[in-house]
Length: 38
Image 1: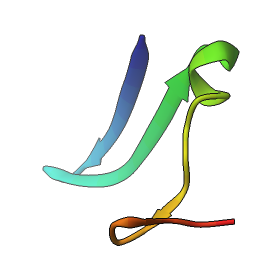
Image 2: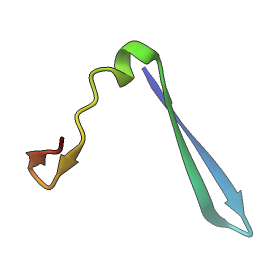
Image 3: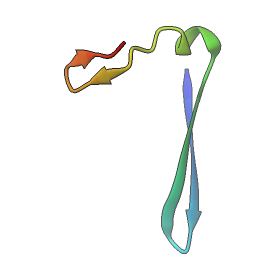
């Protein structure tokens, strides 16, 4: 499971914070377009 926290100021989203359990984060693969990044 993941959670996105949105910070809204004056009706605009000013920040998005992504949170997830460590086991979920361990599965994340950084990508550049359709290619995995090192």
